[in-house]
Image (cartoon, rainbow, N blue to C red; front, side, top):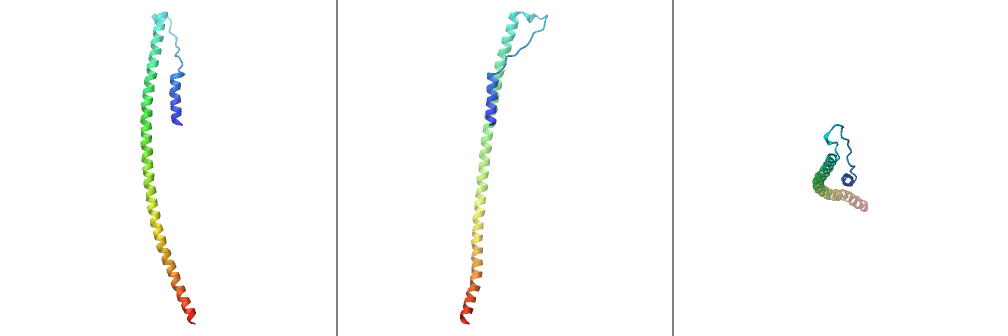
Length: 123
């Protein structure tokens, strides 16, 4: 969503840029229509050049940000996979321990029951 806002702001910068309005003071040699037109043309050209430069810089920053984001996501994914591998290993160890303790418990239960069955059959 942030990328879309960024790109739409750049589009508005190019498309909807209002023309600058200004008034020249009285008593200036720039009051002639030619000088005013030349000044206005220069101003518009400078604004267009500045807009293009701002767009270039913004695109460079956007590309750099995208690269950093991709790198960070790849690193996070690698760390997550490593963590999941450790969890799986720990679960396998716990399963082995559980099976061992189950055997000990059932053996501890079956032996006294067998002894009880032998004792009851003798009497």
